[in-house]
Each structure stands twice: as C-alpha cells, then as structure tokens.
Amino acid sequence: MPDLYHHPLDPQSRFIRLVLGEYGIEPNLIEERVHERRHDFLLMNPAGTTPVMLDEHGPPVPGAGIIAEYLDETRGLGMADRRLLPDHPLVRLEVRRLLDWFNAKFFAEVSEPLVREKVYRRYMKGEQGGGAPDMDAVRSARSNVRYHLRYIGYLIRARRWLGGDTLSYADLAAAAHLSCVDFLGDVPWAEDEGAKHWYARIKSRPSFRPLLADRMPGMMPSATYADLDF
Amino acid sequence: MPDLYHHPLDPQSRFIRLVLGEYGIEPNLIEERVHERRHDFLLMNPAGTTPVMLDEHGPPVPGAGIIAEYLDETRGLGMADRRLLPDHPLVRLEVRRLLDWFNAKFFAEVSEPLVREKVYRRYMKGEQGGGAPDMDAVRSARSNVRYHLRYIGYLIRARRWLGGDTLSYADLAAAAHLSCVDFLGDVPWAEDEGAKHWYARIKSRPSFRPLLADRMPGMMPSATYADLDF
Image 1 (cartoon, rainbow over the protein chains, first blue to last red):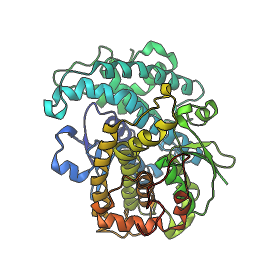
Image 2 (image 1 turned 180 degrees about the horizontal axis):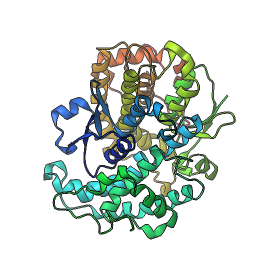
Image 3 (image 1 turned 60 degrees about the vertical axis):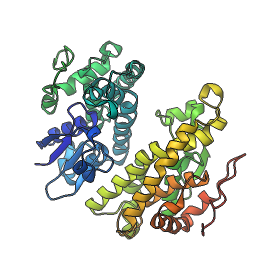
Image 4 (image 1 turned 180 degrees about the vertical axis):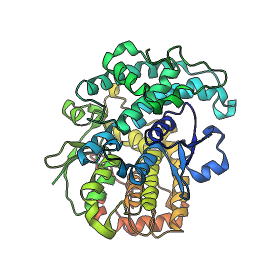
C-alpha cells in the first residue's frame, strides 16, 4: 500500500487518487500543507508540491505526471484494455497531450487560482500569503472554465472517452480538476451538455466515491457536489 | 526528416533540438511566433506553444515533454546505452523528475520570464503585450538562477551526469534552458564551479553547435555565449 502525500482539494493529488482507485490500489493518504514547506517533505520532493507517492521500498515519486508514468510502467503494462495510458503510440500521444492540457493549462488557468484564492489562503498565515481572496484572479478563472468545458464537449462529441475509445488518464485528469472547481461551486454546467454528461459518467465510478466524501474544516461543498444526478 | 515548429530562444524548443541532435535526426526548423496565434498553428497545438514536431505521416506532437516521450517510444528503444530516457524504471523516474524540474520549474522561475521580457516583448505589438522589459521580473529571474545553478552543482558532485551514469534528457533540458539565459548574459557562472564544468561538457557536444550559431535580428548574444572555454 503506497503512501500518498496529498491535499484533499489539490487537483493533481485527486488525479492520482482516481488513477490508484481505477487500478484497485488503496493508498495511505497523508495530508500535506505545502505552504508550510516542511523539511522532511522537501527532502522527498525539492519542488515542494503535491502529490508525492512513496511506494514500498522505492524512492519518492514526485508530481502527478511522473507518478502517472511510473504507475504505467510498474502497474499499467499488465492491465490490457484497462491500461490508463493505452498501448498504441498515437493514443499515448493524445492521452499525454490531454493530460498535460489539464495538469498544466487548466491548472494554471482555472483550478490552481480558484483553490489558492478560495481554499489555501484561508489556512495560510499573512507572511505565507494568506488573506482574503483576490477577486480578479477568481473572476478570471471563472471565465476561463467556460472555454475548457466547451473543449471537453467538443472532444466528447467525437469520441467515447476524452482520449479515445477507452477510459484513460485524460478523463481522470480532466475530472479531477473539474471536481475541485465543482466543490467550490464554480462550474457552469449549463455551458455544455456533452461535458456535463461525460462528467456524470466519471462521477458515478467507484474510484470517484472517496473524492465526493472529502470535506474541508469550515467549508461546505457546493449543493450538487456529491450529487450523481446534478 | 520531421518538421519542428520552434523559436530560437524558446528553451523547450532548444531541448528538443538537442534531443534530435543526439539521436542524429536533423529537423526541418520552422520559426513560429506564438504570440501571433496563427490559425494553422493553433490547429496543430490548441495550447498555442512551441515546440511542435510533425513527424512523417503522423499527427502533430505538441510540447517538449510529450515529444520527449514520443521520441523515446519511437526512436529511444533501439538506442541501448545512448537511450536518453534510460531503461531502468528508477532511472526513468529520476530523469523525468529532473526533466519536469527544468521544463516546468526552471522555466517558470528563470528562463520564461527572461526570454519573455528581454526577447519576445521586443517583437510584440502593444496589444500583444509588447514594450519595455518589466525589470522586477528580470531581477527576480536573475536571483532565482543562482539556486538552480547550485542545485545542478549539488547533483553533479554525486553523479557523472545529472540523471545518473549516462547522458539523459535531464542534462539536455537543463542545458537548453541555461543556454537561453546564457545568450542573454544572465548566468552567474562563478556561482558554482561544478555546474560550470558540467555545462562546458554539454556545450562541446556536436548536438549543441546549431544552438551556438543561433542569432536574433538586432540582438547580440553575450560575449562568451559561443565560447567553449568560457
């Protein structure tokens, strides 16, 4: 059972929780507040970011993209049709493109600013950057999420899953990021029906259940956050 | 011969040029000014970033990390000891960690702000964000480069190459980013002797020559940029 250093509303940590869930691996979850820059955590990941996975006997595996590649090489190969980074080089290319789209671009434009402003800054001291949310950053992220929803809708009208014929890292990354934004009530689901239906399919998977049960002290999730029929 | 859409001072494009050089592949270089948001380029890479590789008969391969994985799967497997993402899972993990360190962290903290402020903004129109450099961003990047040099020095005192016993993506990414900063005269080489000697080794490789010959209209590289004995 690997240790996973994570934060409940860090979208990249949620992506890895979904991946482990799909592969039937239950991690030992350890909450890390990265802004505290804990010495032992920085030794595991000098970049100071979550998630970090500690596999039995191995060195720390830091970062969502790197954990995904590591899990593919150590667990995915034997998964046949359920491999989340499918075998064919051109499908792998498309899945990695979308994985990067969500873990880098969606993160920078939507989920990171929303979680930072609306969640992390509540728990940070003044000298760590804590305080009231920067509403310009929040408004900008709320505007950006619209074109990302339309992009998901555009992809899913042509394919069964975001990366192709089978469920892949692309779906799990997109859903992980959206789930954080949904927790905060900032997904305008009416923007794209296709994207909404695709998310409903992911949300009903058993791997998603632990995410829907996440709660933060002093914060209520949006009314439909855990609702499978939203 | 693949097409490579790049910018001469984009560090991520330079990384792929080095990788192709090490594998003996000479790309057809096509300069792309991403801030112009050219329609046909956005069709190839909706994220709108360089590099993008167009392999014979295949779809576009967008982004340095994705091109690196694609080249490993299509070219690297047959390279034995010269494989730039070496075979062993734990070495692959460390090389990918460092690849991400330079392509994401060093990029965000050093090379992207310096190239944006000192190069791209010269060529951009006012409405694209062009104008005089933001000297706060430049100063912050010049300060950050110091701890990255010390980190390279720390790694190379314990290893033959940054990722382990053999030349890997880790070295080529680090050198690609540093080369852009060096072009601009912003690497304080006296900060770390080990890092300087490691860079001298990379700089003298045949794959590096095309980068040292790069020139930008109206800009002179720093005095020692192309000097192998800097």
